[in-house]
Amino acid sequence: MTNETAPYLKAITFCISWLADQASDEKWALSDEEVCQLLGGIPLSLWHEWKEMAKDKQQFELNQDVIDRLILLLKVHESIAMSAPSGAIYDFFKRPISHPTFEGKSAKESLLLDNSMDNLNRIMLFFRSRIF
Image (cartoon, rainbow, N blue to C red; front, side, top):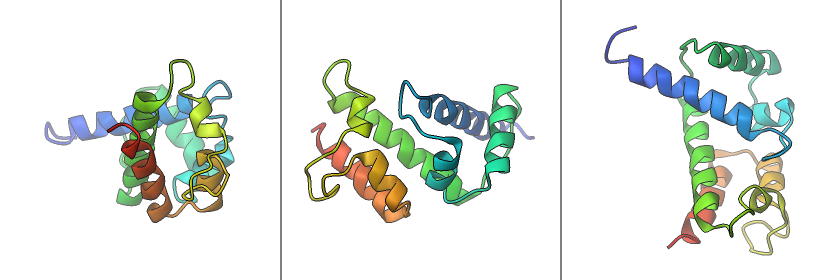
């Protein structure tokens, strides 16, 4: 690890820890299998390995697709946090939305039905548009 890559690797460790926490029943209520799906269909064993490494504050690299997905999930969370009524930040991810983007499904359901980067970006942009 060089001085140039240290911040990047710390950010990856942070993001994996964040997603593991975000997936909890009290927040987004995602199973480990669902997290793997949102991260592009990674193997369950790899997710478990990443979670353990992040928990131990070990630094590791991810491929660009997983990094892009993590960034979009962070942006979804940030946008919901900035637009949801107080106390409803996690509910907004799980409740049905009557906008054409979701066709009556929740953001969670929509992402699990179509985990493409296009759909992830579309959902992030929907929540982002509610801020401004």
